[in-house]
Length: 171
Image (cartoon, rainbow, N blue to C red; front, side):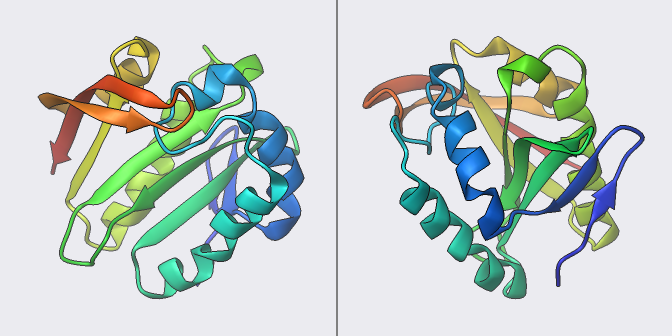
């Protein structure tokens, strides 16, 4: 069940083991791991491969749909939807190579993923952003998410609790 999704500028495809080196290089940039709660600093290729190895089972049971974002033939980020059970809404997460920031690519990629999920019948989504990452909040606002509360969460990359804005979208 590996679907490819395309937009005007991007190709989204399932993350593959062959992407582990590139992903590891990108997420070890503090501009990424400090802004994503579930990525640790100094992530190893082995840790990236362990994450990738969980994807197939998640696709089969419809709980995990991570996609590599490819622009101009190069992996530039990841957008994903995951949930703990099929009765729950998908949580949307994403990151993008800093060299590609400010061009609307993350909004385009994540909108394409959400449209694919909506075609399959999904109608509600949750997400959020760290307090000091308002650019991520703007992506979610462009995708019609609304603020749904605040909380502190543990950020692996920082090794500490960080303020977080919860957001939700129900179609």
